[in-house]
Amino acid sequence: MTALSVQPGKTITRWIAKLVDLTLTSGQSAFKGGAAALVLGTGKIVTATGAINQRWVGTFQKTTGGAIGADAAVSVDLEKPRETIYFANGNSIAATDMGKVCYLADDQTVTLVPGGAPFGVVWGVDSVQGVAVEPFGLVGPFAPLGTSAVALTYVSNDCVLTAAQ
View 1 (cartoon, one colour):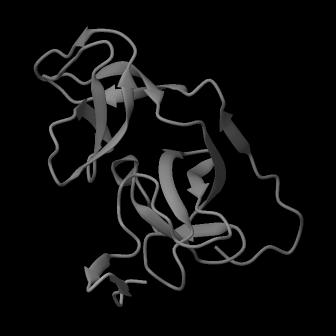
View 2 (cartoon, rainbow, N blue to C red; view 1 turned 180 degrees about the horizontal axis):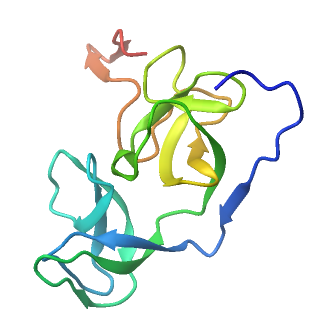
């Protein structure tokens, strides 16, 4: 997309109650109170196992058994309230990109292609509204879904920042 030439009609979504319906991966069982994890690259939820491609997002609100071969809707209580803003989709961001870091392409468009500082985390994709993004904020590229923006190491009681800063 091109940069704006008129005022946009941005949609801000606040998940104040913290309860959201997400997609439980086929064949998975979710137990009330159990840890729910987003599987990066699928945009779907599973029972957390600690796998490297999982990001903990909250706890399941009811017991649900996913049928083999069919995904199921599951209610998840997010670990904190989320506020997302819809932006235009710059490079075919898909529902499977949920949890990935996105970048601003211009004043109304987000993309997965790195170009400057990371802007936020993709929380959803809607064919009409666009890409739901939770912005990182003004402080820096903090990654709220468990990805580390800065790797820290300790040497002789000193803190050394790596090039990932």
